[in-house]
Length: 135
Image (cartoon, rainbow, N blue to C red; front, side):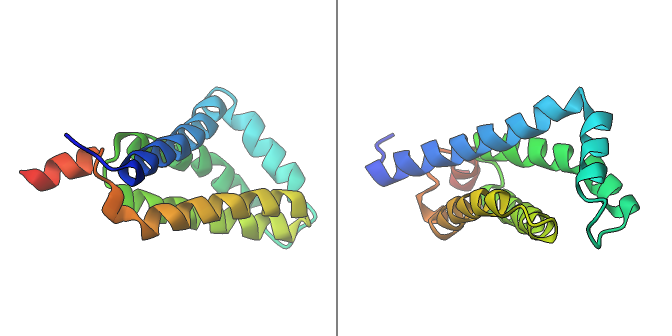
């Protein structure tokens, strides 16, 4: 299978984003209650109700893990990238609500990476998606 440098670069970026997301989710599984409590404390002075922060804190690690795994595999890459971008938008919103501008700035970098993945999905040759399309 001959690939272009752009296809190889795309695969490596997709996998890197996947490892990042999967890692975020994976490390939080063993400390889910502590992570959720940290989020509640962090957002206690924001306009967000505690129950919403608690639910998000419980769901986020599973979303990160699932999106990360799909990106690593290159399975449902387009949809996983859209989901990842939506997660980042939600995280940016939360960061702005608690005036964590450094967090929002870092999350904007993630948004750019997802933009690149989404708009260059045609370069997703090294993936399970590509294997499925060939059949």
